Image 1 (spheres, rainbow, N blue to C red):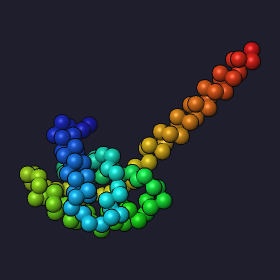
Image 2 (image 1 turned 135 degrees about the vertical axis):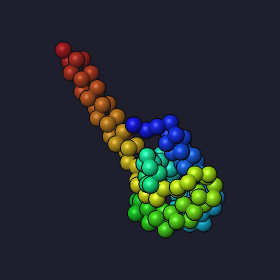
Image 3 (image 1 turned 60 degrees about the vertical axis):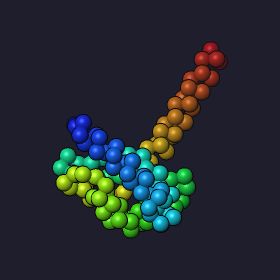
Length: 121
C-alpha cells in the first residue's frame, strides 16, 4: 500500500528528474527518455524510475546513458528536495504502452471475428 507521502514524493521525483533530463543533463541520449512514473520504496532506500522512448531501437543506449547520469541526478535531487534520504535510482524501461496496444489489437480482432460470425447467422 502506497502512503500519501510516498505518492507525493513519487510525483515530485518524477517532476524534478524530468526537468533535470530536459535542462541540466548534457547527454543527448539520456534526454530522449520520456519518464512515465516513479515507484519509491517505503524506507526511501530505492526508487524505480520508469521511462519509455519514441524510438525503441535505442533502448539499450538510452538506459546506459541514464545509468551514467544517475549520480548527477541523485546529487541534484539532494540539493533540491528537503528530505533526509535521497533514494538510489534505478532506471527501467516501461513497456506497458506496448502491451496495452497489443491487448487493444487482440480485443479489436475478437470483436471483428465475433461481429463477422453474427452477421453470417
